[in-house]
Amino acid sequence: MSVLIFAELADGSIRKNSQEAIFYGAKVASQTGGSATVLAIGEASEAELAKAGNFGATQVLYVKKEENIMAYAKILTEVVKSTGSTVVVAARSALSDAVLARAAGALKAGFAGNVTALPDTSAGFTVTRSIFSGKAFAQTTITSDIRLLAIKKNVIDVTAGSDTAPVETLSIDTSAEDGSAKILSVEKATGAVSLPEADIVVSGGRGMKGPEHWQPLLDLAEALGAATACSKPVSDLDWRPHHEHVGQTGVKVAPNLYIACGISGAIQHLAGVNSSKVIVVINKDPEAPFFKAADYGIVGDVFEVLPKLTAAVKAL
Amino acid sequence: MKILVCISSVPDTTSRIAFEEGNTRFAKAGIQYIIGPYDDYALARAVELKEANGGSVTVLNVGKADAEPQIRKALAIGADDAVRIDTEPADSYSVAAEIAAYARDKGFDLILMGRETTDYNSGVVHGIVGEMLGMPSFSPVMELNVEGSKVLIAKEIEGGKEKLETSLPVVLGCQEPIAEWKIPSMRGIMGARTKPLAVIAPSAEALTDVRSYELPPAKGAVKMIPAEDAGSLIKLLQTEAKVL
Ligand SMILES: Cc1cc2nc3c(=O)[nH]c(=O)nc-3n(C[C@H](O)[C@H](O)[C@H](O)COP(=O)(O)OP(=O)(O)OC[C@H]3O[C@@H](n4cnc5c(N)ncnc54)[C@H](O)[C@@H]3O)c2cc1C
Ligand SMILES: Nc1ncnc2c1ncn2[C@@H]1O[C@H](COP(=O)(O)O)[C@@H](O)[C@H]1O
Image 1 (cartoon, rainbow over the protein chains, first blue to last red):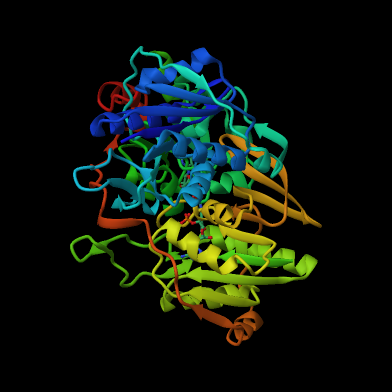
Image 2 (cartoon, chains in turn cyan, yellow):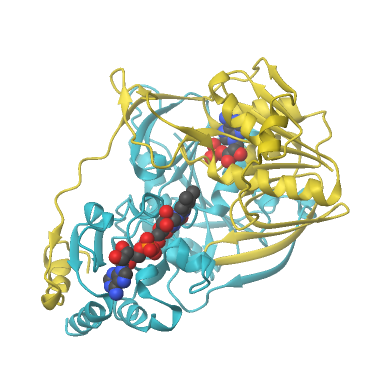
């Protein structure tokens, strides 16, 4: 099968979650005896794009273009047609979801989101996807000729090689789509580790007592190179920015390690974090429901426990 | 302004998830269904926009008759009329195709949906509908203002937010804090009983098919570490869990 991977670019290179998507796409290609082509749209140097080869891509098609969902979807649709691709893979994200969705409409292609494992192609094309915010899985067969897959983050273990892939720059006419939206401003947390892509997340709840008490949590996050997150009430109270809030109505994270500090573990919170590989819960209440979802637990006061953890990390 | 709000009917988020018939069906017994939590935000903003600018709000659900309590609730919250496309929602593509087929020649200015359903979490129906109707689509939208034909939105991007300007007609997937959820008033509930609810026959075909469901493996017991010895956790994370 000819596989096309839609890779996202950030700060001039291929995003980590997109590297997972490329690795996944390359595996599907080798499993079915096909090619793995990457489509990257945005701003990046040829040297950075060629690194798609590290993850198994055999070719990179590049379109230099500012972000516009409608134009990106048009480009993806055109490239699926011109390459004759029958499988399209992307990492799940707000941008990819929007682009894949429009491509699904244009190509009459079946879509499976939150895919967690390689497809079974022995009879048809069946993937496993996570549903109910990680509380179950559905084996889903896609019956259309073209299949679109959004891969859940951090479920694919990537092993990078040193091969590079040839890069070809394309130009595709998107004049009909270009005027559909005008970006007025972008507010982005700078410097800090990106929450959706972080390997480690340190998260605080109402048990942190107030924004002025966040320093011990920030210290641990810094020592671990972790991103910071929070529960919904914390962002509702403006103790922390809205884009840090995880859960059913917030960001869904799936890091290797999630450390919850003073969070009770309400079901709506768990919905955003239960795909984490290892969960540590620190709570002074031994009955806190979060302990049931935890791998490691400490019953204690966050303000006493956090400095001990930070010191232990620094001593490693 | 003519607004269409698409609502899903989903298990309450505290529901126990289980499957039956050899893991081929979701076990519905005892499950409380609700309007999709994100769809509720879309509905609330639609009602606010109607109250501010005039116009109408039509609510649409692709589903069987068991979704009617959720549709009536949307009418009680402030939608003027409702449409139910009478089929079990099978997948994103077919739900989108039903919505697009209905909306195509109705002249809606705004089509509002939730960012995603809380059962299948796909987050794509709005984009597919946008493409099918030749309208721009954006998601997840956290702020929405309409000035004439100009539409100003703020949407979430990885690690931040982006403000952009587009124009009517447009399809949007919504999330908080776009509006506060609305609770139906007694008057709203009474009025909802007599508001029109049209039932339409389906026309689309699904492109995917769920073979079976499974639950994740049970979580092992939590390992407790005494608070005095908190630092020892870090060693365990390194040597036992191997995440550091
Ligand atoms: C539809 C809906 C959607 C929602 N979506 C989300 C969502 O996306 N994300 C989300 O997080 N929530 C969400 N919620 C809210 C959720 O139900 C909980 O109310 C919320 O997660 C609780 O936040 P919390 O754990 O920070 O606060 P609390 O429940 O108040 O818990 C604070 C915890 O801190 C502990 N504590 C206090 N002091 C200390 C101390 N000194 N040391 C250690 N521990 C201490 C307490 O024992 C307690 O367990 C949603 C709710 C609804 C109804
Ligand atoms: N069965 C349905 N009927 C009406 N609208 C729906 C239905 N399913 C999904 N939607 C809408 O599409 C949005 C995105 O759904 P999804 O792409 O399935 O995650 C939801 O938040 C709803 O607004």
